[in-house]
Length: 299
Length: 209
Image 1: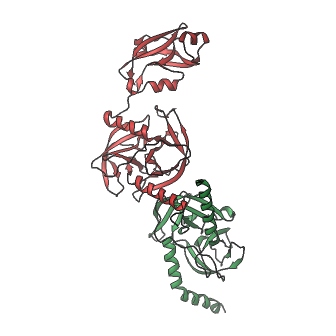
Image 2: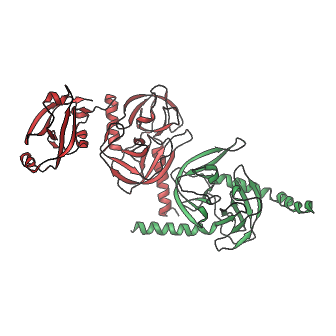
Image 3: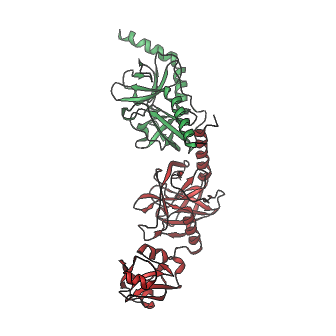
């Protein structure tokens, strides 16, 4: 009977829920029902930013039922992630997946919204998308959607593969209440930055722009095929763009040597890494390509 | 190996193994619910709220219909035990231990009157709900879709063992099944009290006369 594939699948899913469940905690940082979190290091909990409504008196309940006080180490509304530091360590730490999620993959959404125990729902990865702008002023380069049920209090909990590794962090705070999953590699990377700096830096250029077609003549002058660029329609006073010499009427076509066709690509290029650095901006001005160096500011 | 073919075949065999133990319980006031063949000699377990005031009709998989006798009922745990005059039935076995969160489970029943439906999911949580007298009733929450008509039917694990009795009425919009340990205790108690209950049942007509 144990050779039965159905029983094997069932055992594997229960094992996965048990393994990942040990690193799934309850996060009590809001007035309404508690939410969930992932033990991302022995004394650090990764959770959703939107469930952390207060910074004082945050309580975390571990898998063994122990209640531990925690404080905010770093948070980023743009990616809806927050890192909490526990007053004392937990031994179970979540294992992030080494193989990225695949469409159709069987997954479990886990949460610990009550001290009674772990909760789970079954689904498959229905979509892998991105980049998208989040409703909270951030940009997510990649996201997952699943058809698993997000029970109340599941935000901040893990999406788990059949081997018990964590594929990402579930949250209903990024896409107007719909559940999306921040992939583990991105969530862990942002968490590392939050631990180091307490926040996520975002680059600031200081322009308003709209997408326009680039004429064939301009493409020829640019010496590459690029259908669209960003027509600058406004430059904020004493902004990095103004100081760098960008003017209304320029068409921005590239940042740091990489083509920029849409706003989202500009947004992606202006990540925290370029803050405080001089970055080359490729333009078309009067039909001719031109490159200016701009010292990127911080939002 | 054609995994998909194997898997489909295993699920198919699994459904065929469990289905004979699923019955229709037709009360008189409400629509039909589901029931579970609990032993070969005609014990049928269902939800209390499926059973109306009079003895319900039990319909087996081969469409044979039986007037049932109500042996015991307990609104606190929402269970009722019926008996029909049939033999050689194929009962389901309760799981010896409580299920694990994440386990694959299937609900068998007749949602919205649709006969012999199977829905699948996993055990979502093992929780307790408050009974009327304040005691706690252990229940199995799952992400298995349930609808009215599933009530009284089995929630079955991958081995075909009963892990819960589906009870829409307790869970509201969530899928909740009464833990099979509660059902086992209820049946044991009902059988232990069986003789006295039977006597009481016999006494009723004489009182009326």
